[in-house]
Length: 423
Image 1 (cartoon, helix red, strand yellow):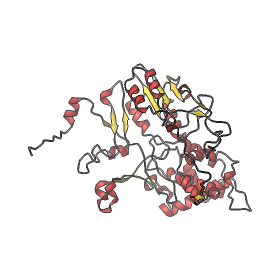
Image 2 (tube, helix red, strand yellow):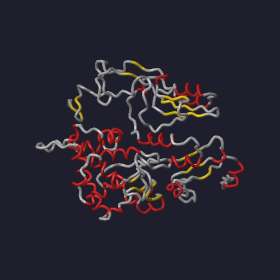
Image 3 (cartoon, rainbow, N blue to C red):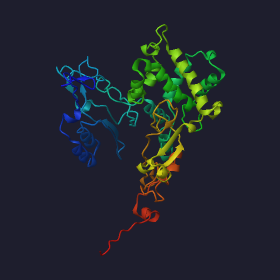
């Protein structure tokens, strides 16, 4: 028998460990209890029954209670354990040493700041520790808090503006970190113009903006020039669009002494942060000149950031225009409230792969005027007028009124009647 399979010795096999399989499954019981809850305490009891997967459960009621619970059976491990690496399962020394009670999970019940939110970000310490996990960067969470703390008279209109917000406060901080250390005189006139645009940027990712085009290409090249020499090109590309890499963008750039700045391929010179970031800016400008032309004012986000809603039959070229909706230039970016998921890569094109599947705003003091929007339309029938009648509103960040009572539904809807035959 071959002792090595895909590089792993058969004498040292790898086993998978998942907490989902370690406890009795009570998800249905949890949903039953939550759906019939009469109080905040009932909902918390239901949430406590979910040992996996990890979920953020948000709560609000007519008595002005608000709450947030992170579900999942959390645990402690020994101080020597690094959960980002393969652990030793032979001795048990790397196994969990304690399972935590649900009360020690991250949560907030009627907090002093009077609101709850989640953007899948790292929660604050609850039980004297930061819980490890596969979290997204702080960008969206930071912007949510930034907007909420500015005012306390929220209504449907202002909430619509918030959930379609495309500004990144973290991107502004990253640009400040970079521009504070560069030597402006070492750049060409075109490169200085690009730096000026970044410095004046308010972090807003609209289709008319030039800064997002420069920023996104520069971030990709900064990561590549910093990490690919150690990781290798293949591994770098595999990790590039993971949550770990996304969370490293801001953290790494603020660490002047990081060992990653040195390019190990240049044995006669040790690179530093300023050199790598400046090199990345020069390469960004050169790339964008080739891609979008010599006039920097034409490097609009609309040229490189687009969305297309694909249908499986749209994979056939002759059917694409009938089934697919788009492509269109679209506002937004990675890690803003109006989140657009796209990959970084060599092309400098950011095709949206994920985003809000629906938007809803429900004011419980005015239910009848709730609003929503879909990316395309209500119907999956390509011949229906409702197949794609919402995409323009969706792209513009607009909403449509929801029909929530029988009379309104009858007055604004069509009726489809199926009549059986006698055959």
